[in-house]
Image (tube, rainbow, N blue to C red; front, side, top):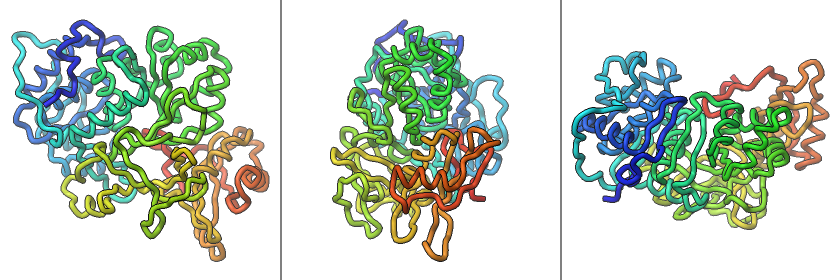
Length: 480
């Protein structure tokens, strides 16, 4: 079978990975990954204590070389979630950096510390497994129950990385910088495996900061991956940091994902740097589905058109395809293609329920523009508000609220209403807590930008909004 990382055999002393002041070239990475892979041989599954370290990256590559399904584990997981993931996936080993303090139940498993400088002859591995064999088991966020393990085949990893390379003109000349965690698709699959499949290199920040981004983009990095929280911090830092603006202006590609980037931050970055931040759309179960193409007409709020090989449609509440491409008619996104997962681990019932005659039900609500571009308005479970006979997407209201000069952060939810069915509720973090915007002021602002029935009828002020590791607002926690 074709190798996932052919560059391991050819690039020698070309830089591959750098975490802080520790780095590996391709020859060193090959040796470390082969030596570690030999210690995983025969294991049914292996967990990865996914700290932002060289060892985590080497461990992930080693598991893929060995053909052992890898279960990335969030080091920030609470005791209950961690116990569920370990019991559900039943790993036989755990990969961890030396000195890592592993909590129960991982501490009960045999530990393999990736050897970054192996000595002696390197083992020879057999041919890589077939494309339908599992590569990763990544757990969902668990917003509708305990997290489910999405089994991602090697085929899905390859297809997603190659389709992104085509869409973004991603090559071995690119140097990627990011500070994303390594237990999910964005940070691990795109952010670590992506550069290695291309034969390029990764510089991981360890901990994100605008200063770290500035330093790396000023010294040869060409691409930046981040989530909206990171780009918001960059936008806030730009007015006082002309060197940061210069560094961003010199980048080849800025990519944001995992949640919607506000129009305000899009425009602030574009104004200061001349750069368009490219948004893309994916999920744990599907890897990447769509992307804005670099160099196109700026369209804040759009996540672009489907990637090569991905089929995408919208369906209404009865499951009928939505034909309108008017930017207004809302439907649920369904996708099919070689980028999809194969099953939820041990959950045939959930796997069957997730598909509609071969189409994966994403649970994301969106509209389509005339050119087929997708605009996501929110999750069906938390962001679709049915008020007065209208379907309203929380996401578009949030974007408009964030354009108000007195609003620092915003979230929108629905609340039961005896007359309307649901009413629109805005949760607002004011820029000046001593002088917050009034409910009428915000309602009028939304009504002018969108339509009157989308205006918030209730406004609740907050000091901050609860967010998860990827910067997504946790709306259940907000309402609770």
